[in-house]
Length: 150
Ligand SMILES: CC(C)(COP(=O)(O)OP(=O)(O)OC[C@H]1O[C@@H](n2cnc3c(N)ncnc32)[C@H](O)[C@@H]1OP(=O)(O)O)[C@@H](O)C(=O)NCCC(=O)NCCS
Image (cartoon, rainbow, N blue to C red; front, side):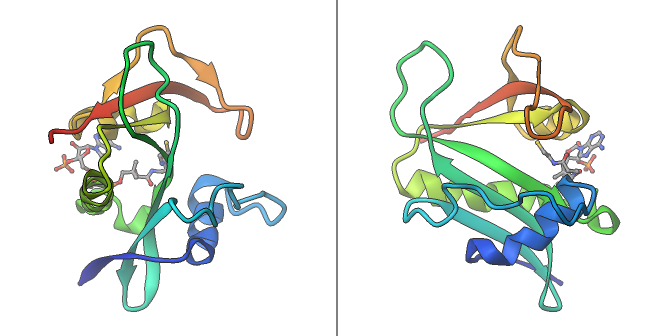
């Protein structure tokens, strides 16, 4: 049985390191915005263990069109042995309901190319000509966006 809960950011550092930073002990898994009052952190919990994570921060919309309140998604991760069971979708659904309740219009992210199938399957769009390498991981990414129905 998996539950989705709001948690403090420190509960997510371990899964961020394991799933997103090859478990490297020296990797920085804290975000400077983690402790800000308007950051939101969600976890998927299985028998008290965190098996999924996602964090969102209010952030400037990356496209030229005017947009109201928007959030940036970071650190979406599901433990490999729990992937393809709908947990990523459940984490995002909770994120979207939390930020919609706070008045948000849209979400954006720098999405890893290896995860774009997940994002496009769950309603995100890839911004054309947005391919880039992450400065943190050197992995290929695209800017992705999801407008919320309100
Ligand atoms: C991306 C990630 C969070 C998705 O989590 P997940 O729990 O496995 O995803 P879900 O089970 O909710 O998938 C929902 C749908 O997305 C699509 N999808 C997910 N993973 C996919 C994959 N590897 N290939 C193709 N489609 C995929 C499918 O349509 C899936 O529905 P289905 O299983 O019924 O076909 C997870 O794969 C992960 O942690 N990857 C490694 C870390 C990472 O890249 N994070 C993103 C950083 S930007």
